Image 1 (tube, rainbow, N blue to C red):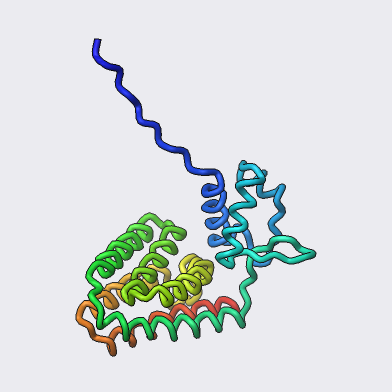
Image 2 (image 1 turned 60 degrees about the horizontal axis):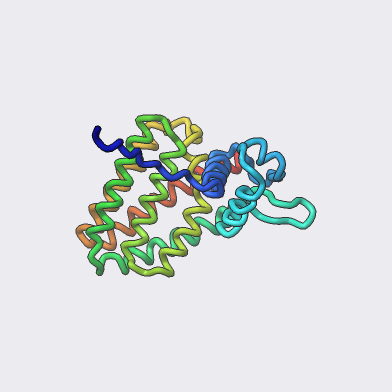
Length: 230
């Protein structure tokens, strides 16, 4: 008789990671609303996961500023305020335009390829009508753009800002904010602008990329402010 075939076991995902990823998706997709109190016992019931992994996940989310701790309210989903939103867009524009100046003098080839892959993922998400994956692909694209700077401080700053922006991205991608601009047109515009940013960086055309980045952020900002003030 031959030797029995060994079946390789796939390691189980740690429960704390599973809890974290589930909570992130619920927060980004606004299933857990801004300022909502996250009761530990309710999370155990919702996720079917024990208290310890959930506590570990909440600590990680707190570090990423997706949740906040308040003495009387306990843990709440970080609120979305008009003041913070405006400040976030100001920071996004300032830092990402600064990255362009540095990136055009670097060899960005590896990151440009990753930006292309992220944009393809965005297109697939659009075709599958998967708004959450579209948000993640968009985040991935902008993080690889930040990495073109090869500057860990700028990359860290973009991560903080773009993580904050994820819920706003979901709002932008999941709602018909401007009746004159159907979601299909908005999606196509986002993907097209991403492609132009990649081409501009490849050609080291800082002026053109800065204009694309400015317009890209302005469109995002206007959609969100219209949604928040309507």
